[in-house]
Image (cartoon, rainbow, N blue to C red; front, side, top):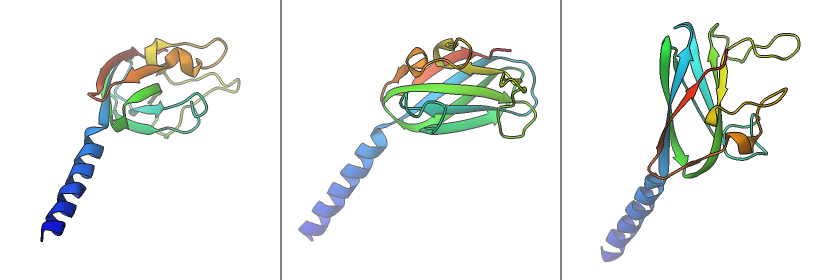
Length: 140
């Protein structure tokens, strides 16, 4: 019985410590031009995966003016995010024949690249274990 209680206590301790490490990233996205479609957020945890393989993602119905999206259960650490307003609801970031986005977008730190997306280091921020509230403006 003592062994069973000790095992149960250890399991509860491990479970609660893993949940305690999960942080939420809440982003208020300003300058949303319409309530059409959704606002999509992808979060990346390294330069090698930036814009290729997301560590977390979330989306919300677009609200004209400002939309809030929360990406839940991220480990504390360094990240960068990319956002786009999927106004036509097709699930992808649309671009013209030259590859220039035709839907509004933003990156963490309001970072902008030269002739393309910003570098991970320009968009990088630190997510503390307590979570983070951020604000960014869509580029048109």
